[in-house]
Image 1 (tube, rainbow over the protein chains, first blue to last red):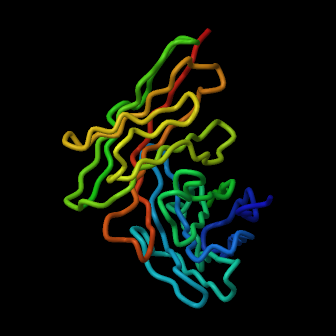
Image 2: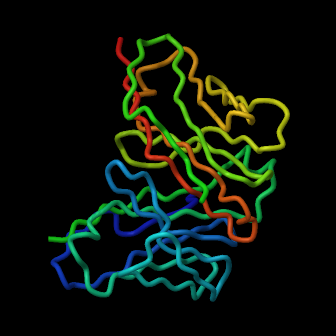
Length: 118
Length: 117
């Protein structure tokens, strides 16, 4: 019953370094998302994917890239980290939802990655 | 643009009392969905309850109920018989109207609830 797994859980980067956050889901969901959470701002969508091999920009995509080479994995990359990217990152997934499944499960979120860029 | 507004940055409630967390939304679409999530201090996002815009009955799930007033565009979360474990951040979210081929969610800024003995 793993659901959505994010790795790593914590990371400290120096300005200019690169890294990749991995999101893996075992629910055969079509849709996957990356959000960032900053104090006082709720969650904001960075990028999303509606299927293997497809990605699209969300509300705050600058400075990030994503890839979805396999249906179960959604990678978020930071090519040159900046202090403004210090945040908590959440991955989420959902299927082609019906009202019934939404009532039961909502969207499934990972446990988050706390990233600090110094 | 679609928007979710949570006007209460923080709320306090005594154990065993009921509390209402406010959420208003702005959309011109007729078909949409509203969610509430709980985020405890451990950080994970826990799904609580969902209400579809065409659902005739207000959603309920255990001690959680959603007071859905479509004309007012509000979807307030009511927690009955509060428990100490209810202390957390609560987020209201809306399935972005027109996004049924992408299923994007937009979130409010959250309300921090503290339950005291």
